[in-house]
Length: 424
Image (cartoon, rainbow, N blue to C red; front, side, top):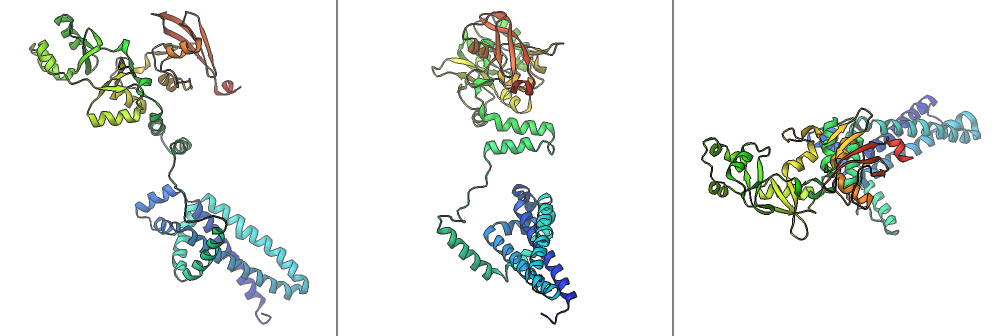
């Protein structure tokens, strides 16, 4: 190489450092690509995404190609630098060339390009995928040989690269992804997605209307009282029972009675003929399962029963949907009438309100694993029936019983603590 001009050697060295930066940056960029976004772009026909997807389908082959090119370039660059050092500085040029190439390759061939590629992976990966698609065919035999030898070495240690685990996200991981994508998603979309993911963590018992609060038609009443109740019904579907909800005979769709009510042709026998068979569900049914059951059974409400078959409450399709999208305005208790904000920042809350709803509205995390209502939580914490003035201290809230009705909490005063204070 003594006959080669130094200017040519310096030019070749600069080109090789640029190529080293290309291989280093493209490796980082391709491995840093968001696989879900990549699949989305590929489905839309993005050429760079399609090429990158095909390359990443065989990661061992891609990595072999990148390392082959990168190491070849770096070794060749070091050799040329050594020649330049010997011609300029004699025997000491070897040490000078080693130090200079270490600095140049580290800064310009590794750290800087890899950092840029990690920040903007698509800008580097998509153009690089075009180059690798061209290179991978002629170099396939060499890459195959390298991978065969490497995989053989790994197999000696019980490692098999082809046995790759699934890339599917777990529910918890997906929950984290949605939470961390808050800046890219509208608040409403993020809230709905999180609610859908959390739906399986709650049972129908957590959101049902308690038995004592079920609004229904008792057909043992006077007919005039029944008509008045139907005319002023606040719900579209009502359970119909004889004496008590335990003896439910069917479910009536009030909307289908509008005509007979208007022309005053409705009779008790006609009402009974329009009843749908009551639909029952266990109190421990997860909300996701119940939502599918409503769809399969083509029902919109179900009576909730315990392990003994006794009716404990009523759950509707609307109740489940409200867990996802929030309260509907058609409910007579809309706008969270069960929660009233006081001037001092405390809240007056109805005792029969579901804890999940309280948590959602007050942005706190009261325990829900054993009880479903505020009254149940207070009784569980007190280990006795509530009395006026009784208090419950929890990490995120202070609860004081305000009024009691029929041995249950009617209203309570809740003081919430800031997150920082709750952690102390």
